[in-house]
Image (cartoon, rainbow, N blue to C red; front, top):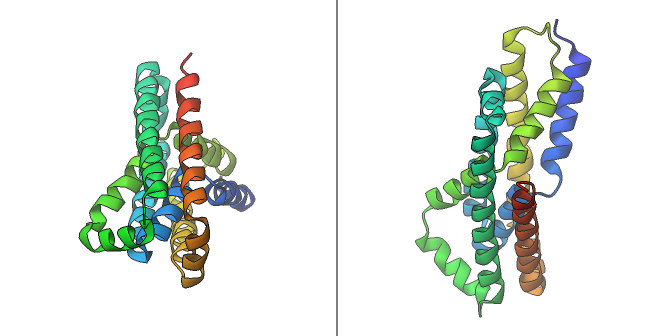
Length: 209
């Protein structure tokens, strides 16, 4: 049976989890501040695609099989930690670089948006917490008697909401007012992003022991 109240509650859980600061949101904000609107939207599209992949696999029951395999989960956490450490290094390098704002804007013209898209995709696909979020959403929104199509409708609805949220991050942090803010806080914001990435990566690794 399809229950609208549970469906709405699941959407609420997803919105709260997606809008709250995380590796994907910070990466979108940092990229938008450094490189502008188009690269920020490209990275946001990658994050959305990664979220949609986990959502579709959860709806199909594939992610449950993957997460039940301890070895797969271990390697996913290791890969995610390595990738987050790489992003932390990039954030530190960008924060400490001389004339970073000019350099970043120049590099924007030379960098293909596909690279930013793949970066966003990698952030989400290597984050085991993403599938846990989807488990929570589907558990809240779907009952045992829910029809098969309901799970895919839930995933599609969450994907639309996620797209709105992530693109809003990109547009907000690439606005002209954000550029003035970035000129004053570029170094501290980059270092905060690096610290956050490192903390999440260390959390992934520590959970293995």
